[in-house]
Length: 75
Ligand SMILES: [Zn+2]
Image 1 (cartoon, rainbow, N blue to C red):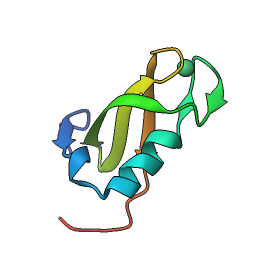
Image 2 (image 1 turned 30 degrees about the vertical axis):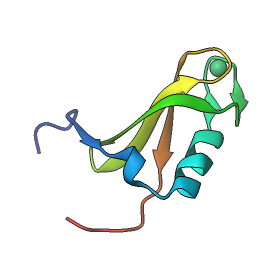
Image 3 (image 1 turned 60 degrees about the horizontal axis):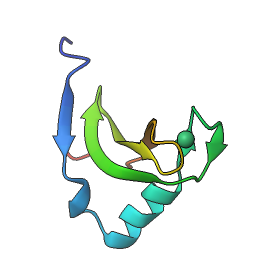
């Protein structure tokens, strides 16, 4: 149970285009304190068994992170 903080990169662009678009729209920006502002430059990664998409807020350019709820359990 080490390496808890290690990011495992994933290929966001491999997702279904509609799925990508949905993730890029359904965002929360801590800086703007608003939802659904959108993000740019998405990067998908896994951390501690959870999947996140990190990008930049389309409005203010600050980092924004969305957790992806992934039902699949493939090791
Ligand atoms: Zn923002």
